[in-house]
Image 1 (cartoon, rainbow, N blue to C red):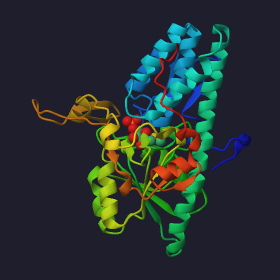
Image 2 (cartoon, rainbow, N blue to C red):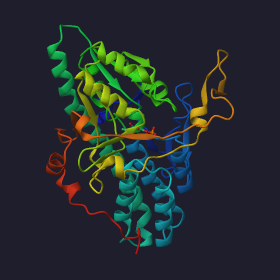
Image 3 (cartoon, helix red, strand yellow):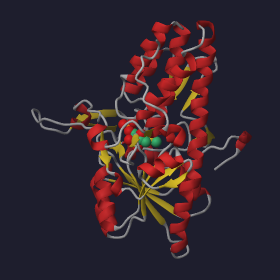
Image 4 (spheres, helix red, strand yellow):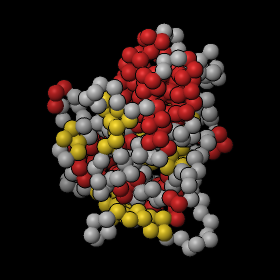
Length: 385
Ligand code: MRU
């Protein structure tokens, strides 16, 4: 944890404090990290239009539920810069919303932008859009820091039960770290804070096929922060739990329903089943914009993204002589399926780590702690009327 210049940050790349999204020095275009080049290359991208923002979300050059919301918010600001008409406001909302279906943060951020812009004159819209997009980013950082402090207590409780110096083993899936948010991450925030407090925390990192967000991104982040970690094939968690090598699981989420069902990267459900069978606490870290009070039964109601088959049929990596190569690992003619997410029913979740505390995964706890979100009715109006 650092407090340079008054800004508390979990994210550092090569020792330099940064964020996953920023306004470029021209004051209007938007910078992001190209996550498809990590961990081998650190490269950034400059977004200059709504279409640029939509493209990088679709290609997953930027990804993670909170971050795609932030990128989409700036995509709306870029759209207003081109043309601040009602028609373009509506068009930009539709273009950005169509990029990825599962993470509700995307719709949340786009609806926030519409609410901030709908009743403003064209002349006011550009400045108002940049202002709200910047707020969405700043709010994400504050929320994640609070998630970190709340989750830290859980790690401290486990550490207190251990022998001095014995490590706390946390298993995580996919990447719910600073690369998936504006800073800190959700699932990783408590881990960074525990590490910085001197708690000997070690992370089992699920590789997370097919796109390897664990192996490529979470391992990169943890390495940058100096957190001890071990990358494991996705099938390993159950074995580790049977042998008492996992003290807790913490994962992120793309959508939590009103009854506490949790949608997250494909494979999360299997880890939750294994955790239940082995008495391992299974926690989900989430910012409030991830709660979708308009749906209850996650399995029945959440749209699950299906991505291109080549993500399963191929693997990309760095060769011994430094080239990045993609190779095919599936026989010609075999069908492949690429479901991006699955739903873990609330009954398998030990607790939800939120910015307002660690709460039970049920409707009452969600409504009691987030009455401001629960009272929001689904916005069925057109973006602009
Ligand atoms: O398909 P991705 O890489 O965008 O999926 C990301 C996840 O599933 C994360 O766990 C989730 O978005 C939470 S990020 C704080």
